Length: 333
Ligand code: PEP
Ligand code: MN
Image (tube, rainbow, N blue to C red; front, top):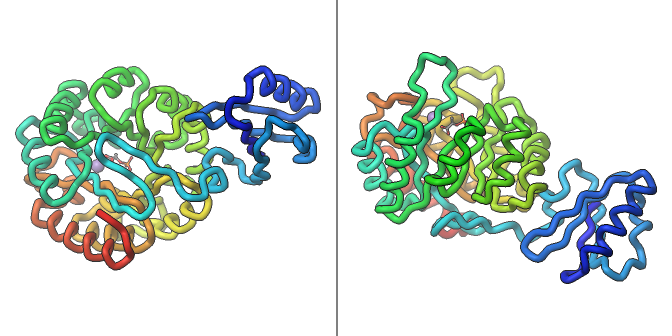
């Protein structure tokens, strides 16, 4: 159950109500965000809250996630990252390499994807590799390169955090913090990015249900960070002709249950460059608010995920198709 107080309610009355809920054996979690005064209540009857003058509305939400529930913002949330906007009615493209490898590499990719319509750059500096002997990323040096290039192109940058010890460095250089599929249920890390005060891109765990993605998002929201975008990036199934199976139905399902913007990562879903564009087109048609995709100046020489990296020409084809489908479904780019 989600209680919304009238704005300007004094916190004393909120605390008194919280105590009385707890005395009846229920639990109450209070959060103030952007002027909204909200209380998540469990184990208490809605009648308990009738005739309390400080309460504006009682949303009787029966899902384990409350702040992520669509009922809180039926019109859908808007998340701004620098000049990039994620919201319903728009389609926003994030592009860049899997890993930053050098200044020249990142600059050439940034300069190629921007005129094609990418609104944001991506690039990993701390890579969650399956093998400890694979390229692990350039760390802070890589983040500095990406930040310099992103600033010179006036595009915001998203990069992944895998280790809480790197949080300050990520904070300094990235405009949005990515939590990858392997950490999608790492609750202390989710709390940490909830408290960092930067927009967050939360990917779906490779074996997580949609509900688990939403409850994971609740960890970030409950820290007061509503600048949150969710990403479907393919899940593990028995199918092995693609790296993962893109759960395209997750888009309309998530749109029904949450107000948070939803994007698709067709690159990690497909695992092969030739399948990335069809999945990106499906993302637009299914109602996603954007995509994040991997592009490389020399795909065959990429130090990570080279099989799925789009060449500049392939990215141009993707963008032409995405623009056409976006127009057909009434999405602005
Ligand atoms: C990535 O975006 O580089 C990445 C590692 O993605 P995922 O967590 O989806 O595998
Ligand atoms: Mn990758």
